[in-house]
Length: 397
Image 1 (cartoon, rainbow, N blue to C red):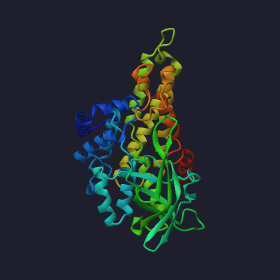
Image 2 (tube, helix red, strand yellow):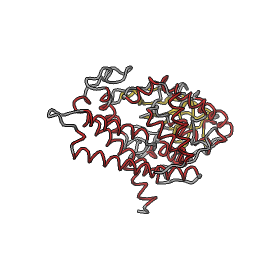
Image 3 (cartoon, helix red, strand yellow):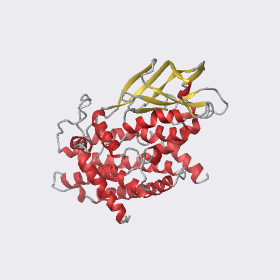
Image 4 (cartoon, rainbow, N blue to C red):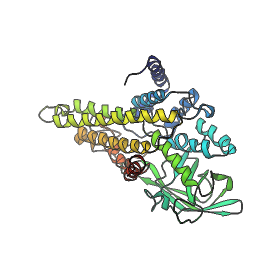
């Protein structure tokens, strides 16, 4: 798409900032498929925070940027292309916007500045062992006793809970005929007595997922965000922000370029290149077309979002197609890498995978990425549920 002179000037500014401030070792970890640790991530977070670019999607009065939808797109695109670590969405993209809309003034003063500075990291307590896609069936209870809520139950797939300071949690505060009713939205520290976090090691060999257990966890009544029993409304607002914040395409372009590089370099026994195979080249072109489609829809959604318009089912559409494109690219990467995609050390959790790859460095992490992204069509709301939302709210079916 064509960009104005002002937009191109902004792109130049973003590139210069990345060149100066993105630590080279962190960039190399991202681009080579290695694990980015918390301290690496926070170095980039702090650089963005000092520049005032940490929360561009926030309103200016809360520390956001007065950027156009195109500038938002350019920033996301360039950071993804450069190999910058993707920022955790839980504070910046989820609970922050929720507090702006539903939080009390005291909650905003307490939490928003600490999200911006990186002083307070968050995790999400939504899914439960029996309540994933059907989130409204959750059973974790919060009973009101005097001036406290007492929480009992468990959550699963609590990403990065072992690094978080606070958690936002959906809990059942009453039993109602309609299961979406009686759910409330609470926020509290993960260090509160009675909380236990147990690691879940993914098939990629990495620890980013957890189970979280609550046993007689006491939190004050001012932990409630919004009205008691109206947490489902709060959650829907949060999930719209979650899906649009996960729509940037720069990192997908980088992943696709990596596949193209491998296909041009690696040769079969007869000396032919995979990129010269008509069937594989067609698959690459199909994926690139799908990626451009996601990018176009994302731009329209950002424009509506910047104009303070709801995007509704479009966020579900973005989530479905982006996750499918992610999976397509990761699959093509494994095909392109061939045997060199396979070996990685599940036991080397502190170092990541493929510390000494058998083949070229560009094959490092292809298989762990493929394995991890099998979940892309499930997390942030399964694609089956998103299609139901699209059918109902966009197509009127």
